[in-house]
Image (tube, rainbow, N blue to C red; front, top):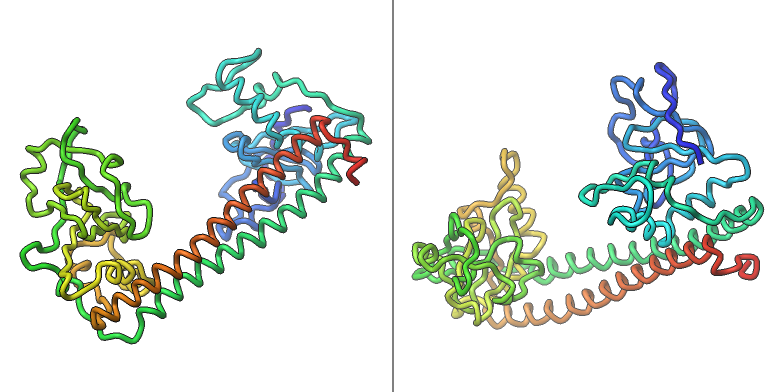
Length: 390
């Protein structure tokens, strides 16, 4: 392979990009952004059948073979195959786990030649030159590349179908929640809160973690929808800091909502977190159990209706963040409490089934990608004879 760095000021060619899934294609097929910079004089030229890869994303498979002449930015390296080398075979070789392992060895300082700084993801051409690989004859290269073209296309189609199914399941989940909450009288969230424990945000500066200190909840701690948090997963603050924020001391069953830039995250406080606290980007919502069911309110806060209400309220703001006042005014469906419980139970059960289907489908997608990677590696390293599999 030969590194190419040709530049022709004034040349009129399309801008090209490299996609992990689609290879080298015109930039206009990936984005609606303007297709041209003010000047393309410093852009590199790639010819049809050149291999182009992104130096920052080579391990993720961001590479491909150019189908036409074009221009690429300095983030890309351009390689031109020598006589007797099929560029499609080389691309598959570079996408194999064997090749990735060779790169990792050099990043760790193992092996000869130039090394990549382990703190950066950029892989220059000088590193690729240090990797020795067995290259079969041209006819065998073509056979392997054609075999992999067909097999990876079939796997890619299957993955696309499963990803579409995941999108449909997620949309169905959102619609189901909305439909279950429709048709009821509405009230403001603040009217459902215990007057003796009003809504309030938490600690301004929590300081460094303290062994045996007071645990506190921040937006980054909430990774699920309305799930309870575990005490041992939380950071802690000094008791003297927490003591200044008695207004947001938590009790089991409280609902907490993020109001910072990552607004809209919702969790329920487990009993073991009684006495914990919050950061300034979180609000405690101590609901009245005689008025509302906690799980019902959680589903209401996670609904599309609430999300759209919050988005509308902060529209045009310089800093997109939810504030305490907007949260307090959030409209919440308010049917009789026995109806709330039935709705909450229904949504708990139905969304759990959908979530299981999504997880199973995501697992299938992951296995399909692993199979694709294993197949590429086996083919380009001679572990399988593609002629016997044709």
